[in-house]
Amino acid sequence: MSQDVIASSGYLFLATRMKRLAERMQADALKIFERNGFGEITPAHMPILCALAEEDGLSVSEVVLRLGISQPAVTRSLSGMQAEDLVVLSPSPDDQRQKIARLSAKGRALVAIIRPTAWREITEAAADICADLESDVLGCLETLEKRLADKPLMDRKGTVNGLEIVNYADALADDFYRINADWISKMFVMEEADEEVLRDPKRFVIDQGGQILFVRTAEGQIIGTGALQPVGDEGDYEFTKMGVDESYRGLKVGAFLMHALLLRARQMGVKKLHLLTNKDCVAAISLYEKVGFYHSEEVMERFAAKYKRANVAMRYPI
Image 1 (cartoon, rainbow, N blue to C red):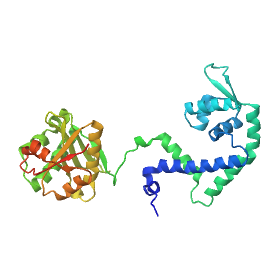
Image 2: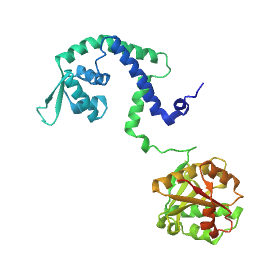
Image 3: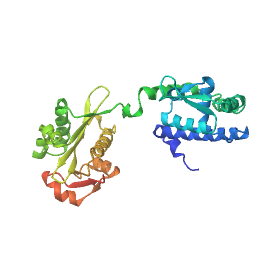
Image 4: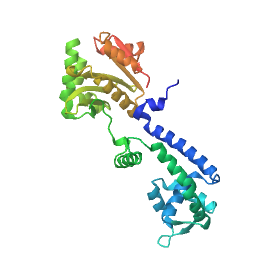
């Protein structure tokens, strides 16, 4: 049996799954309309018919507010409904630029027959699907709509295990040095190229057009950092100085940080991205390879000379 990718992906495709469910229900509702003899009626017009049946003589703006859909969509539907002689559009006496929509005689007759037949049948069928569910479906939908209106998805920060990505600030310069100096000193020897960048990250990274990101815990501790440093004069950036506090290793902090750095590189419009490392960093190299970094002799020849420890060079296909 083939896997349902949309369902198995959880919240990733929540909107797509809801749209798919809506399309299935709307297709069934259309069949109910057809079975009741309303096959020539456009289903998209039904919400507006319902709104005007509740309160006739609504402006376009009022219809938009009652339905929560875009004004262009409402305007198109009303034009189509006018062409089908379901509504009458007339200028507002208060504002000639605004149109008032009222049901025509044909529209009122349609509502009078469709309300106790097709609309009732669809309502009962939808209620039957939702029967015996543990949650109040309509209540959950109302809550989701309110939460989305209050704070859209784009304003909701993604976190992993309570971790958060934060941008460079001068107050974090000591953390940048601390985290990197710790792992470099334990595995290798601090070199001049390390000291130069770690002692003055603003000058050698930020002021050159680079970026430094940090990982912060829910308690406010800085436990990881990494940089995108411009190098050379051909638009190259080095994925560099990425380290995680030793006491937090094994919690996928590195992967969380690396993904954030790669995303930031794309947002910056970086075209050429590489890294330098050492073959003893086995776990790190494996992580780099998993996200698409590949070994590059060209990078080795052009950039590796600045570090004695650099015997692995990789490029990212950005």
